[in-house]
Image 1: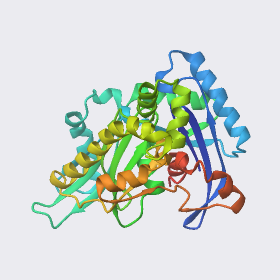
Image 2: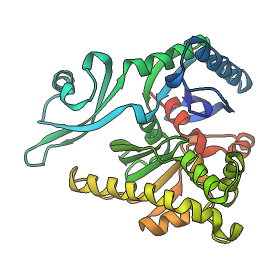
Image 3: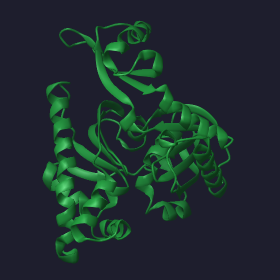
Image 4: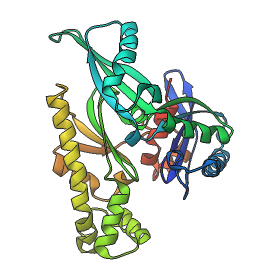
Length: 336
């Protein structure tokens, strides 16, 4: 399977081969681009330009399959958990169709709606089935699919970024908090036994961190981006000036993480996450892990999307620095 992750600044692709119950990495690649993502494209020519970049990436990365799975930007998809009485799988299929209207903020005929059963609580009082409902506007899905088709590829699956992420980096028998730092938004999820149980998206992300450094230090955005990557939240670098600019923004994200855990425990009656797993470009900022550990009082690690994948030594070496960028693409390629 091939997973294609079209971000707002980079496109990532991963091809995996299934061997028994495990996966092996066949090929991977990442490419930066200056254009617009499919959902922001104004016309066909912008989609065509993006299709050419995808074509180039497939060629350079030596991707052999033309069938791909895609991820949709979490900030534009509606995900929520819904509780039903103890119905059969078939009855839940029907119930979701009837009930979806009251849970999603767009007309049902303008949405593509999927669901998965998270948990059957037979011993609860009263017994219930917890279902994850995901709805995406058709006018969001269509430009993504069209772009990929223009690149000469076939879309065989579409899902949300967080569903893919949970598949690649969450451990099997635990409850964890996933945090994916994108360029324009940060996605937060609580994952229990590899299943999404709660999601939220906030608009504070990589670009906000960079802007804060640029304004605080009076430097150009490009320079601010380099400072952010090199010095991050380190007190000892540049007299702690970069840390001073970043920390207030970082606290906004931390507050949202705390709110997510509180909501999940109080409203969903879920167990508290045992650890926090980070993904995305900003996850690699110096001292981000230690500061987050201190603020949250939980173990914090950067997710390794290749932990469940056999990777040969040479590829592992070249991937080391970019691993967090590939989490969504790997999860997409793992779809059964």
